[in-house]
Image 1 (cartoon, rainbow, N blue to C red):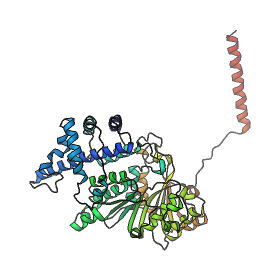
Image 2 (image 1 turned 30 degrees about the vertical axis):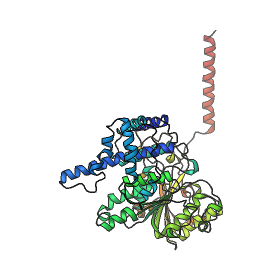
Image 3 (image 1 turned 90 degrees about the vertical axis):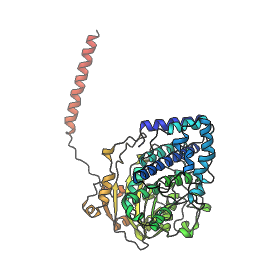
Image 4 (image 1 turned 135 degrees about the vertical axis):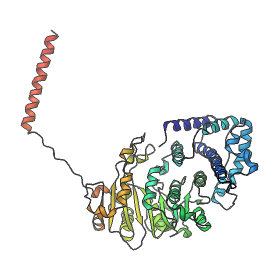
Length: 488
């Protein structure tokens, strides 16, 4: 979670750009992203220089050539505002737009329309000076910073677009345990948080496999990560974000996932990770007809679930966030989709999350749904977990409370499901047989199956309580008489 000091720095930078004339919050984020990207490129190049110095070998795949030293953050930040402005506008910005030097890369495609909007040398110099004090080597810092900036967008929460907390993303990635063989997709990728977390998991747990030969590296950089979004600014930010995290050419492209039917994507992916926008409802005319053939509804949350099943290969798995209404909604579309998940596919787990997880941007109650596409059933028992705390306070402040987090417990129990058969319905987690779910009209709300233990409390007989009340009345009466006597 972002610290008070870092928060204050970003607020001051935001105010500087706002007073300088950049009034659109998304434009502020975009321009800050460009500058942070430029700063991080210099930091990465410096690391390459140090490594080359230690080994005595030439710099491997340098970011800047010898004649491009003036484009580095550490160089131009020392120049006068007017010179800095010209360097960044006329040289540095064109440099990052063509960084991959590959006209076919998604990064180059999304960056071709990028604009440098810093209004004056004074504003640029002030922002560069303030950004220079922010250390960006820690991936957590980058994630916190993005999360905080995106939360400042005035429209955050409209159209159901809520930013997913990074610790929730990490939980979902850890539970699905991506492997180098996976083809991963987020059909509503935004700034690519799920894809980045999946890439970090692969690098941490399978670096020997993804870097073992040129073909493995190519698959990791070009064939593993796929994301769609219909916000071009978010696509640019997501592409830069992925590049900074070491994924050179992910498949991140413009697409309205619910409106465009693409046969090339059908049964293409082995893992779907997503928190799609829940806008409420869509017009039938703008919705892909093949999705409506499965569930005829205007509800975007149901259409996205249908889309996930369509995108997955047989044996492919998904971890996605849904609003609670999906679990117990009474419409025919709700019941049909739940029945499909339980009877035709393999529904693995439902993790009920507290409503404060998405605060301060939204108080919506949500759940994590984990399932596997089989097209032949396979659901025997569904694992339910009642998450009470995610490691932060559940109010608008979201203060860190690491001692209250359920996340490690979720992972421990998930990795030892055999032991869950012994758990009672009064525990945080338990298994529910498919037959019981079917008999409850495929209701997947945890409250339908969880049992609550009530402690028996012994009360005194009513006559004893009344006698006590009478004694209290007498004491009050005597006290009032004494007070009246004192007042004369």
